[in-house]
Length: 99
Image (cartoon, rainbow, N blue to C red; front, side):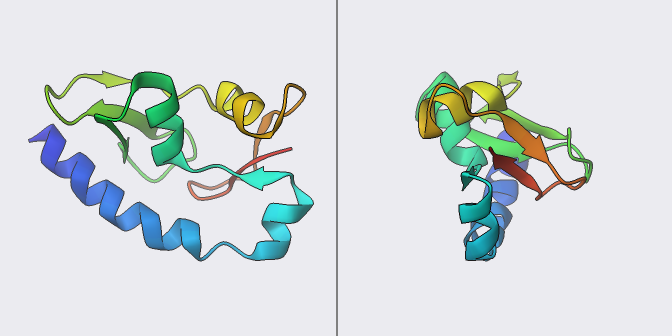
């Protein structure tokens, strides 16, 4: 059941990430792709999912066994945008970025 909801959450995630304003992404160093963050942290069988609509409601789920884990967004930013990069949020679920 959890894997199904993770797939549905993932399907909803992609269009919104692609719709982010380009100037926001450039001004802040880069956006956070939650799917990629889960892949980097756990491997390609993991996907991003949400438990609610708050900014801290993201987590990763393994599509093969349903295991779950947290997302280290600072580690994602450092790997993706450089060692000094950090995660930030403007208050909402979809408002994560790297500085």
